[in-house]
Length: 366
Image 1 (tube, rainbow, N blue to C red):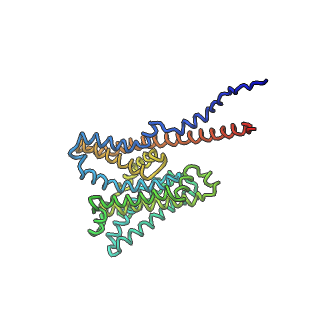
Image 2: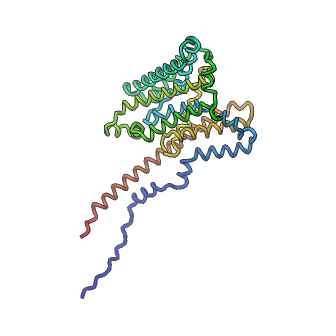
Image 3: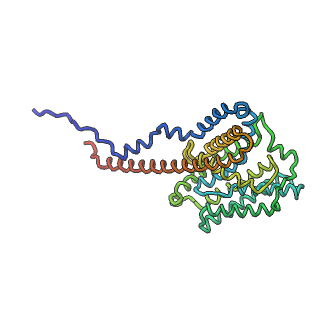
């Protein structure tokens, strides 16, 4: 009589790459904190400066003023975000904002009979042409986007100085136009509502439309996107033209708020906008995104405001120092996120390949 010996086979040990891949899928506390570091930083600034300067920093006037002052820069940051999603760097967004502002002021002074809303539409069309020219340089002449848009920004600065005759230019705007930039709705600065509407539209396009998915596909791997049938050149044109129009919109909003042009306005907004975009790219979705950009920007803006209130008058050096340091840290964080994402994808591909190989090597059950 034969006796059947029960099988004592032990489960096959999981391949190393499978373990690594499964480890990459898990979300450790450090990664979770990193994704929400802008919110944590904002809360930290609020607590710190709320203790140091409770009478000024925590007042509703300070918060409302900081939000209102930051709207234009936040719009510039969103303008930079659009081509960045497609892997293109548009360093001319600040200069485009200044161009929109100088055109609004010039027409307000020299052609007061033209309705300002018509001037605004013309400014947006002109800014779209700026984006088109940048795209031609990048796509047709194969110039790196950093160099191309940096050169375009200098051309735009020369155009602004010519239009303003190298002096400060104050537009002759009526009270209705200025109220569109300085009014409030239920205690909320009206320019904040403009920013919110723009952010919601951009978020919807990025996250819930084929256009947004195509932009991120091109930004992730343009050659793979081209092989998949995407028109990379058309998306590059569209992203740069949209970016320039949003930059022009920032200039229009600034004309509503302040109504005065000087040559330092546009370039001065570029660095805080870049810091917000790169810091925001490490938040939430861990790629360039709308809400991460806005939260990152206002977290940094409130940090600057708290330092200014704490150190008092004569702290003109705080803002450029803080913004420069923030940009360096933000780029480092964004680079780290990109590296982690690439390693995670590589491990997942290796795990999938090993799993497929193990499945093919295993004989079918009898």
